Length: 245
Length: 247
Image (tube, rainbow over all chains, first blue to last red; front, side, top):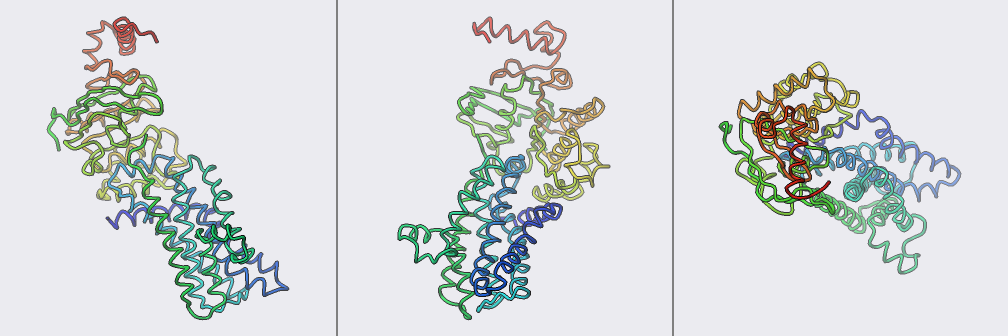
């Protein structure tokens, strides 16, 4: 394990992102615009914004990071640079951690912006602290990054990578407890939602929204989300092959 | 560095299957330090598969490949075997210098190597240009520059001179010979037969097999032909007569 190589990967990705204004806008500006849109929709009914705002602070970063990471990693696979790197003294873990670190930093920036906007300007009423809100948003964004890295192994083109969004993300969105509490779902669907990581990401946000103190439920939700993120990273490492057919 | 003439690559009984097709079958080969070996043949004959096998990125079904006394692709080789793929494997939205600095960091090569390789591939004046804005031939040279960064002992170059103007091609071949003279083992593939005469040794490939292994002059003498293309045709016809295979 050589940190030098991991940092080189991180610095390279950040440099590439800095040149890619559209992607940067998608990651930093779009979540803020979507939150503002939501606030406007319920400008006469603040209770709804308070109820949905928190979970959406978790969802937007998750979806955006999933999309950007899966496509970026796929480009690395199809352009031949991944093969070249793996033929060099590059460890799989060093490579993935470099990616996770770069997108993790962007996730932090994204969360700081979105949380500041939601709490500072749009008057989102969360009982928990702003710091906790930001922390949960970052962990959720990291989950998106890790899952995006993993699914990129199962796509051959950027178009195929984007197809994972409706196939894998939207079902989680429907079942995560945002539209209706998960306990109100038919038992079979509730069981399925118990297995999906986004359910815990949203539950963590709801916990911050409704409780002023750090609860054991919050800890539990964050542990599940983190475990999913680490598991997806480990599976992602397994899909990086030095030798291909 | 290895002494010139020493065996650096030994391939024995190599068999590679890609999809349903046998790409290489029972292939044996030895390569030596100090030589520029040309790998020639039509596209689809197995050149790239053989080169990928030497680098250690190709899944192989049978046989052994030793490069610098360890199996191909083993840890120690990852910083001493330079590899250029057919399509340039560099980052389009980074500048030439940024690409090279990144790969130098991965290889652990000193930053001063960046300047050296830029001069070697004649791209010094494009150091700050975005790779996406360069021509195809220039991009290929950035990719070649990356392979030269770590001062490789074995260089595997898959069609490195495609799309280059004749002057640049001549200069790059001079560079390959200069590296070989310093002890490197250089393998260059091409589907252009007129590049053959620039090699110290030629391997002609067809349908996953090496059908000739000689110096350019030796090949012309044994086939009684005046150019490599004619020699290739002669060998293909001969193979068909002896095996009765039609293609």
